[in-house]
Image (cartoon, rainbow, N blue to C red; front, side, top):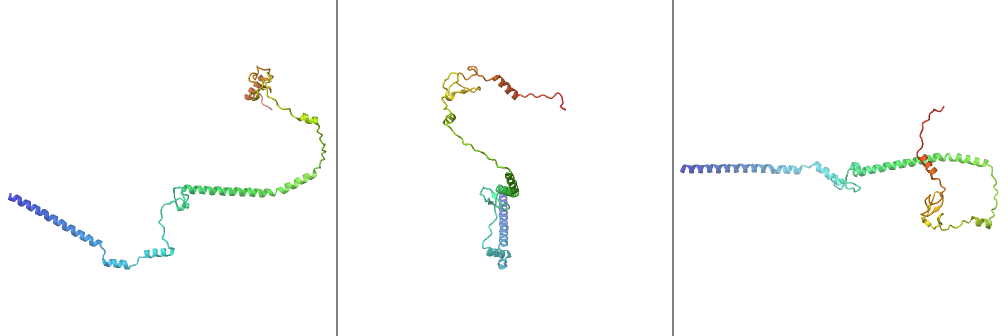
Length: 231
């Protein structure tokens, strides 16, 4: 038992010694890292004494312009359509830039067409004097004709004949019944009521058979090839 206890004590001692050695190595590594990370006073003094040329240039630009350059980033379209624009498309999105180019093309086409019309009108104005001269010569060559105007004598009898008789109430031609706006005009040219509007109810002189034949002949023309070639 005593040997077993001694072995246990030796084991624990060795374990404690190993842990202490491990702690010592960790402390030395930490000190080394802290020394390496902290700048030396000599380097600090040198860095502070040596001027940086890029900083000088930035300071000079700031003094000349008076303002710092804005950081470049995505910018919205000038037309406030919700999309992003770019400097290559005049700070507009692709759709707005395309629409603007189309409008410019249409304006140039309209201007060119107006110019062509103006040029055509100017060229035609040179032809007008010659036409006017020819017209004047032809008018002078025509002899004037004398027109004798006879006074019209209107008598009372003629005025009475010219007066149209007033239209009375519309009546059926067959039964003389007043029809008004509900009358029916037949093809023979007479007005009839609802009872006598059919051709079999009144003596209609219109020939429906010949009219039907003519309509069928017009709707169905006969197409025949010539039997003999014309010389």
